Image (cartoon, rainbow, N blue to C red; front, side, top):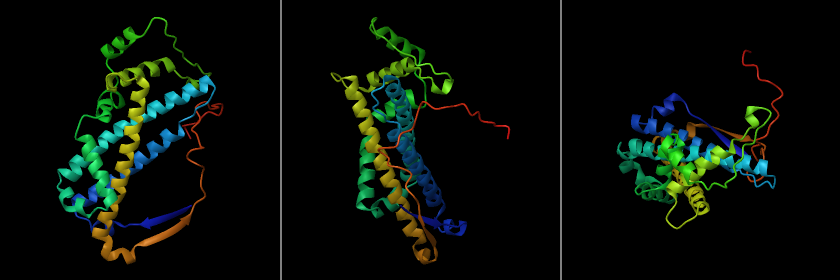
Length: 255
């Protein structure tokens, strides 16, 4: 696996106007967060036939998905403030590649109307549901419903699955369309999450290249670039984040 290490100095950054310089840094931050969280979501999926393992992974994936959704909404707010309202869009949108322009069009169309990401972000990603919302959801549950808690020998291996199931169903009931099932709603959520994540990462990378060519183009021959060969750390579709872990070795935070 080949990685290109690019060295930039403060003098290089000074070649960017102030608005572009700040936006350049924010785009890298945005892309890093979405890329890492998307990896975590993929790595957290496990279709184990063992119920206790399967439900631990289900809980883990749901939590990561809600965090990503919150970040996607905040990413759109970032573009609104630092790309559109700053007028940078008028200068650079037309300079993006076709892929970058299409990703931006997709984002504008998606966030320009009612969408699942905004609804989930406002009620579940960065805010806990209200007392009344949870109470209403509990009252709607059939009396013969069976829930589970999975209690580990240490807190880190405990899964309060009942709580996650109630919250997830509450979320899906709020975003699902009429005459659709909760399973359909879950599919829609993950489809939106996957598509919008891809659009943001594509736009961010493309816009950073556009800004770099605009302001570093004259000095690109002087930029230091190092080629590094890195051994792959695993296949994304085969590697999984474990849930049940041995915590016998205690961490000593006093060192």
